[in-house]
Image (cartoon, rainbow, N blue to C red):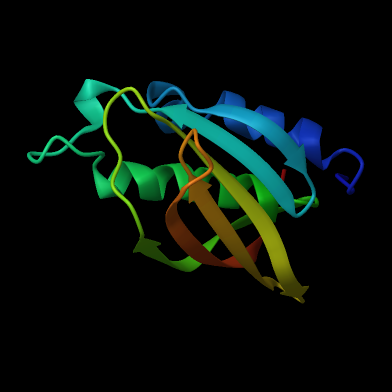
Length: 138
């Protein structure tokens, strides 16, 4: 059974199997129950037709931090929904960092906020994720 003390180890196992995050070059900087920090350097192939970072990839970064933060016990927890607000565009060569924090968790559901900033600490996006724990254990 996974508890708060062993959740980071279980999350490292989860991330070792996460091919999408690996392909995007994401790096987990912090993995604590209810709190995670993940960074990603924006590559040329991550930009859209306007030469700015594709919004879907900013969402993917925030979603990865959210996934780590909300998987804080022995139950597999997934997104029930999420919203994002884009605040600033970025370009290839910049490094984005997503910080996820649990706001509340009750029963099988949780609410998590994720702030995405650039390498200067300027806000890039704000993401709110709603989680639901499944009956599957990890």
